[in-house]
Image 1 (cartoon, rainbow, N blue to C red):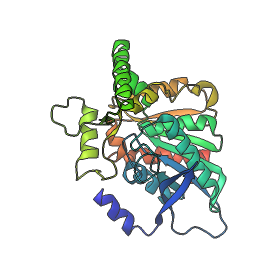
Image 2: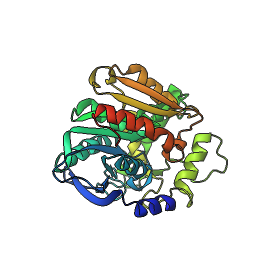
Image 3: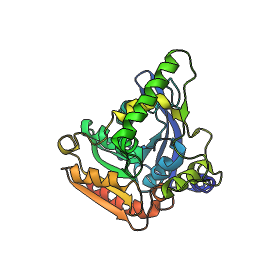
Image 4: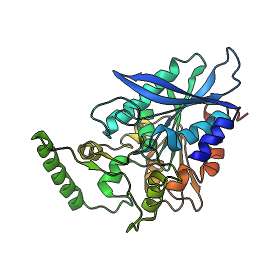
Length: 319
C-alpha cells in the first residue's frame, strides 16, 4: 500500500479527492479519481468501482480506480454502507441487499456531477464486489456495461464453500447455528464477529486463503485500520438468501466482462455468470493468475482488457 500511495501522490496526470454522497439517510464515503487536465465543459465517462467483501475503498478498489483515471475515466471507489468510513448501523454488517443499493447510490452521485456523461456510466467490481456490481446492473439501466474481476457470488460462496464443494447438510447445520446466534443476541448476548479471511497463514492449506491473509493482514501488503477482517455473524442468513446471478439470463441486457485467474479457486463463479448471461459477454482468463493476484499483482494483466471493454462499450478511445 505504501508504494501505491507514493505513486498516486507523485502522479500529476490524475487527481484524487475524498467525497461523500447519500444512500438514503446514510452518508457514504468515497474516493474519486479523475484525469488532472479535464477540459472545461466536456463530459467524461465514469465508472463505479465496488470493493470486495472485507475490503475498503483504499485497497484494490482504489488501485483499479486510479488506473482507470489514468485512461481518462472519472472513477469512484467507496466504502460499503455499515463499513469503513461510510455510515450505517450496526457496524460491520455485510448485507447483499444493502451492498447492491450502495452501487445504485454511487451511480446516483455520479449523475449529479457536471463533468460526468450520464449516458456513459459503467461498473466494475472485484471479488464479491463483482457479484454486487453485476446484480445492480441487472436492474439499473443507467449502468451501460459491467465488469467483474475475480468475481465472487457471495451467496453461492457461503452456501457451497470456496471451491463449490459444500453439502446441503453443512448448509443446514450452519443455518441452525445462526438461528442460535440470533436467539442469543435477542436475549442480550454480544453479537459474534466472524473473520472474512484467516488472520494468519498458520495451518491454512487453501492457497487462495493463504494469499488472502497475506493481502489483508500483512503490514507490507494492503492491511488497513478500516479493514478489520470482521463481519457480523448475523449477516450470514442474508448472504445465504442472496444469489448475485439470479435472473442474469433475462435481466442483464448490458455487456458483461469477466476476468479471472486460471488458478483461482473462485473461477467457478465467473464460469457460471458467463454460462448463464445472454447479453454480449466475454470471459478473459489470466494464465497463472489466482484469486488474490487480481487484486494487485496482476492488475497490469487485467487493465488492457478493461480498457478495451470500457472503451468499446462507452464509445471512447483509451487516449
